[in-house]
Image 1: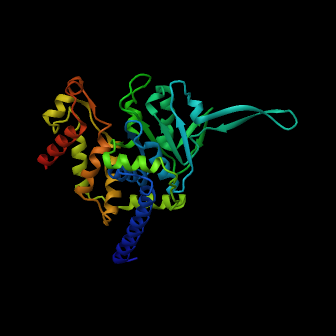
Image 2: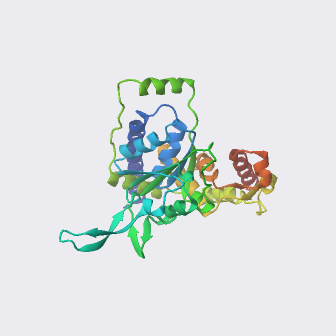
Image 3: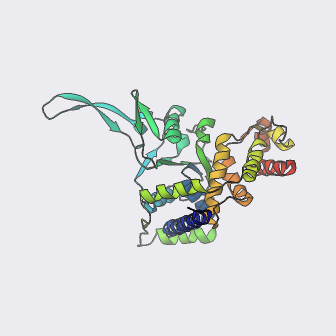
Length: 335
């Protein structure tokens, strides 16, 4: 194929991506009231092939939103309600002794809810660190190791987890390694008055809204492959990398605010999350290459849960947005 043919094929594939993403957005949006910015970030994480952490107070529709995306995408759905007494086997499954038709006994593997394309880990911070760690291998490698045997998960395996930010009793902070597995942390704000009234009007009437299935698992896989094909110019990669580097207090490029208030910044997975998110946003904007504007739009959801404040940073109660903006400005000044 000539260079012109390749460019035309890329444009055609990008147009198909935009069409299908819009269909997915409309299917979910038919049920969703407000939360458009959160939906943008959720669809970006989903189409990038990453896992997402949703943070919001009870009643903001986190669970409903996750279920709607799974249904609209045509993916099988499983849910685990995390509690302090939940065990890893409750998620992964395990071997059990079963009796055969003639009374003989045999060992049989019973898969847990993790063996599904789309898993909702509800209130993940209520699970103990031991139970949370059961997701680490699955989220990174889409496989689990049980009784010495490695078992593959669905190729589209995706975890969307929810966390309640206001409850502390009976909760366990997510370890850094666990948080780093989530491509984005997405805040679900409380609805404004107009949205609040509309939610109550819909949910207290006779009509029950449903979500139309507009994609198939095969098409979701195609869309994720399309994202990977988006061109990332070296200059854009270097700028994004400079921003991530500037979030580390020990780096010479780190601004004073970060040296004073952060203990640790983003790493390789943070940069991967920024670039993958930027590729989805570029396709959404009708481009087959990423630009600085796409990177900037992905900085906050990709970095906010990866920045670890020092004691001084915690005491000052600063929002992650301020650290990220300081790193962005420092990277810009260094260019």
